[in-house]
Image (cartoon, rainbow, N blue to C red; front, side, top):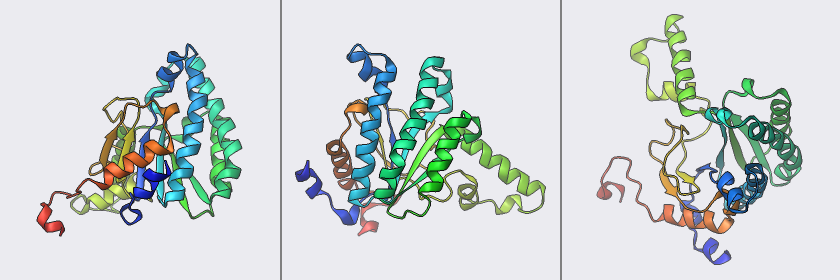
Length: 247
């Protein structure tokens, strides 16, 4: 593990890593356990990857914790996930402060159960002065929801004559998204072997490098993170240009 870590070029570190934490249910099924067993064990991977990212010097880490579509899962699983979020945030705030990590959340937080929302807002308040890394939880989030909300916000400004339609730019749109205060991700990792975005950061991932790996989320370790970063560093990011322009 340390050997892989030592190969990482800190000067070329992705500033922002986004992760779709997939495979908790399948991991539990392989062990003949209920799906919630997988979610509980997935918390260990969250802790490990958060600490590893901060140690390396990653500035932003976004974790897709609960999508708007996840409400369609069995009610027992959803309720357990919400309780798990409360317990995890309460337990981890001390660790976040110890590691100088600031907690944020994106998504329609108003739809979360009151206890879950309170734990989340308490965690955000308790860590607001930390500066080492921003940990962003995407909760009750979807990319389409965010783009639709941004469109409504901009349309309202045009209607109120605060903005002219012809003056709308990419920067205008970015400023209306829930991710406005964060840079777009450089690297997106999805575990479990699935190769889709599942409505995650649809605007922001336009130029991110994607890493789809077969490992299920509870088995995702620092070593996997280091491998993904090394693969990222071997990519040539051209942003529409040709190689010669980057020299």
